[in-house]
Length: 310
Image (cartoon, rainbow, N blue to C red; front, side, top):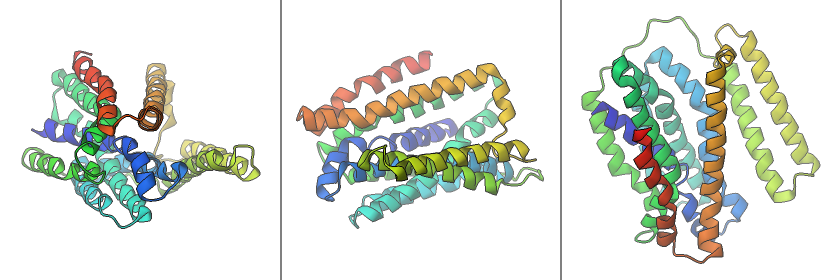
């Protein structure tokens, strides 16, 4: 039951990074926004998660992973409810930030909770189930979104999380053990968190501005230069810190580093596909969003079959 609860939130939090893609052409028209502006519905979700993932992972080590996970599930559902309310484009972006805050809290601790719950012989299998749920969510978003849009408003893309999330919260409440505060004197790396969040935000903003006004503009080049400086500052500070948020010594493990690089390349390809293909199918080919979602369902269905086998 605990694994089902963890898998549901792994699926939902990754699903919400891409489920809105198929609805972006519709939201852009309804909210009278440009393509570059409406992309921030996806960007701000990923930006907040990327900025805070390591911070909440560290916080889970200090105050208890299950506690942070449970709080994150509630925050994620609150963001899902408010995202579907029609209070304007700015409020939608704010709600997506709330969603992402909760998602970062659950994403950063679900694998650690699973590792603690299962014995070594079952650990690989249980972690593979979580990984499959996460991969399914990240690639199945446009398919689910297309199916929802064929029968309901785009707001139900967010509201569908609520009944499913409540079931997962109940499962977690009755099956997860009580959260105990670990005995540790470690402290949070606030400066490292700020530097990393500033780097991610500046980089995203620079790339977004580059799309709008061109990458040859001085202000865009300056923004990307600042992002590089912030990244270098983060690396230098973390290497000198006694309690870093990210210990760079782990990258001395070549197999681990190659695995991380491989994962980065896979997600780059997956997210490019998820963002570009909905526009191609709906705007260029003039397919119905529901049919476009069915076409895009081939990849998640394949993952659902081969993931557990792997």
